[in-house]
Every structure is written in structure tokens, then in C-alpha cells.
Image 1 (tube, helix red, strand yellow):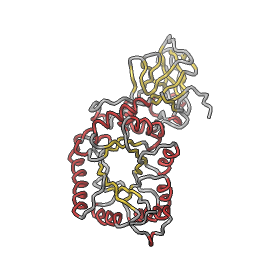
Image 2 (image 1 turned 90 degrees about the vertical axis):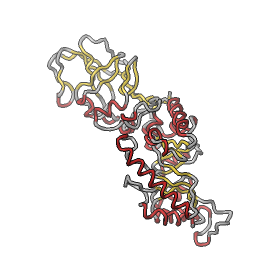
Image 3 (image 1 turned 45 degrees about the horizontal axis):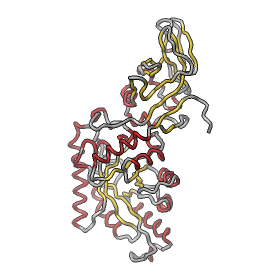
Image 4 (image 1 turned 135 degrees about the horizontal axis):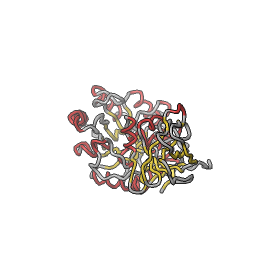
Length: 387
């Protein structure tokens, strides 16, 4: 679609590649799995995947089958892990796209085996482990070690693993879990307990002759703050894009933010003292001032409550406060009296201008959320431009 509105997000693919190199070096000898779900955390899944692979990632991970298919359609041939168990009806597409599904129920194990057998043209009942036509589908068994979102309960893991290895259509490639509080250093004991539960499962399976090739647990926070959790593979999402997993972990590793949100002033007006602006007229000019209109709004991922929280933009090389209610398509900025701001001037909402910077975590702090939500929330009307 042709873009006429002067608003855009710049995605620095070199920064993503540099972050991947940093994380791969940190995790070595473990492999780096770049998590590119949710459109690469708002950066663009394909460009993020390509940049991460250029930087040293050897695996990719997504949440949805559709996201994996998008990467395959773009010509990406790296291993792609599905982080959640696919719906039963999606396993044929999983096999066709050569994705590595996560499983944690007997129903999914059965569906995976049937899809693999069907793709090989061999009926499950007549399949033989030695049949050359049967290509085994590699699956990863997820263990719920305490987050209680998805994953096999500890008491079910051994039986599920036995079911997988007994099927000639499947191979148990990975065993893994996900940390709940690895980004909260004051709760390290819980993270350590989760890791020990996973390792206990590994030992139990090994005693039965079951040894998955890959054991993995660490997300970005785990990879950064918990060296013992790096194991065979680390799954890094937010850090790949240059954002710290939490403010408490800020600065632990050198990361380069990859996304900037920018626009241009569309109109400039002089407002008399005491005049209100935008919906509700909730902000009034304390003195005669200049107000600039910026063509970005809450439909683009600039939350409506952000201006009430005292957020700034960078305009003319300095911080200037948002003024009045953010609307669906536009917001206003108080540029002060006798301002030289003009229509067409660049506005930076997230990113750097001059000697100052507004990071995504600054928005997050004002909104009571996390940097992840900020970058993922930038809407599809905002074109992403690789730089």
C-alpha cells in the first residue's frame, strides 16, 4: 500500500545482527535461538530473522504455525521451533513447512505422529522404524516447571517422552521449560528451582535411555543473568531487539536498540493562554504557546494515556511534552512560546535525536508496563523501514 502519511518506524537490521552476535558469544557453546514471534516483536519477522541469522543465531522460534510458514515462504531454511503446541488440525502444515513443534499432551503427540506418517505416505498402523520413506518429525517436549501457563506437568513427562520415542514417526529432539521470573533478580531462587526440576527430568529420562539432543530453558533474562541455564540452546527475544529484559538487568550486556518511531509535524498553531486542546480539553495552555500536530495516534500504538503520564517527544533536538489527549490518528506537542518549529520537522517518539534519547522502557515506566508491550504494540499502519 502506498504510504502518504509521514510517520514510520526505522528498523536497524545491523543492530539486530550485532545483538545476535553479542548474545551468541555470551551463550557459547550453547546455540542462539532468535525468537521472532509477533512480527519480530514489532520489527518485522522476516527482516529480524535474517539479521539474527547473519549475527550468529542458528535457530528461530515463533508462537504460531502461520508465523513459521511466513518465514519458510520468505526462503528461510533454518530450524524453526514452535513455542506452543499447535492445534491438532495444524500438524499437516507443521510437517509440510518443516517446523519443530512443541508438544505437551498425548493428543498432540498422536496428531504429530499421524501427520508425519501421512506426509510420508505410510499409514501409522503399518509404519516401520526402518522404512526409508518415513521421515521422522522432530518434536520438543515442554515441561511445566512452575510457570503453569503451558507445558506437561512433571508427573506426565516420563510417559509422554516414552510415547514419543516409541513412535517411528517421531524423534524427541528437545526437552525444555520456560522461566517465570528470570528477569527479577530478587527471585533467583525460583528460577534456580525451575532449572533443577528440568535437570531432574533429564536425569530420570537418561536413566531410561532417553536422551534428547537439545536441553533448553533460558529466555533473554535467563541467558543474561543465569549462566547455568544456558544449556544447549538459549531462546532470546527482547534482547535481540536491543531492549533489556527488565530495568533490573539493564546494562548487564551491551545491547543496541533496533527500533525508532518517527513522524513529521503536520501543522503548527499558536494557542492563547487558557485555551484547551484535543478531546475533553483536558490540557490548557498555561501561557501563549506553540502547539504542533503529529500524525500518529493510539491506532498506531501510541497509547492514549501516554500524554497524561507526562511523556515527551524529541523535536528540534530537544524534549517537548505531549499536550492533551492522544487521539486515534494524531497527537499534539507543546513547543513553548515563540517556537521555531515548522511543519515538516522530524519528531522522534522512540529513539534518538541529537544528544537525547527516548527508549521504549521510558514509555513502559510511564504506562506501568514493559518494553516488550511498547514495541509489539506499534500498529500495522506504521511502515517499517530497514536502515
